[in-house]
Amino acid sequence: MNSEELKIRLHNGDPVLGSLISSPSPFVPKWIAGCKMDFVFIDTEHIALDRTQVSWMCRTYGLMGIPPLVRIISPDPYLATMVLDDGAAGVIAPYVESTEQVSALHGAVHFRPLKGRRLTDVLGGKALEPDLEKYLEQNNRGNILLTNIESKPAMDNLDALLDVGGIDSVLIGPHDLSCSLGIPEQYGHPDFLKAVETILSRARSKGVGAGIHWWGSIDEHMRFINMGANLIVHKADVIFFKDGINNELGELRERLGIKGADKGKEDSEAI
Image 1 (cartoon, rainbow, N blue to C red):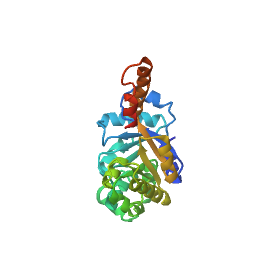
Image 2 (cartoon, rainbow, N blue to C red):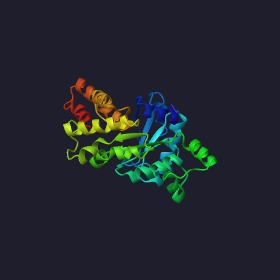
Image 3 (cartoon, rainbow, N blue to C red):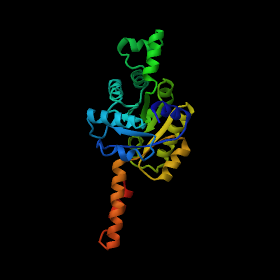
Image 4 (cartoon, helix red, strand yellow):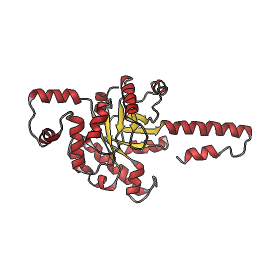
């Protein structure tokens, strides 16, 4: 799947599935190639990856036909253009709450390389010259803008954010959203579930992709899908690694009668 196909699927509401890949090791892509992922999520907000590593990962996965979606460290349009320069198919902007932020990101992702007064005029409705309009359309056709909706102000302002234009999908950040709601990490709380359903349904009603990064069970994912989610970011490479070690070494300890054999399972369930 290329980025244009991914973008169309997001807007159409078709399910797309991927995971967070944190490792920049050259050994990882050959295993990812057989995992049938529609995209990879690369996070620079919470994971220590430098620009060279991110660019290597983006270009490698992109050439493999797995569009890389990169979360930048802040909703800064210049950071958005930077990761696009480095090979990202899509930009995930964290903690977006205002229409001004969405407009600036829209300009960076969909009108690159325009900047400054020229970009401000275009975003304000000024017509483009035919050659420039054609160039920008071709140059940015596959670029994807995703905004993290992870606070109560963002949820309350979601219709206005989506009406700005340019957002291809929203992505819920469960941890930050739960904290903003005053119920930290209480993911089964009715207020949290209601907020998730509100965000997903509003996005889909606007013809925009809707997703959540979730590290829990498949049954929980299905609950979110039934609420409207079609962008599914399931767990992360490090979580699969930890679960595999804990579960299988735990089973070996149990079979060998080693005390504390069930500790690994408890740790895995607590993630």
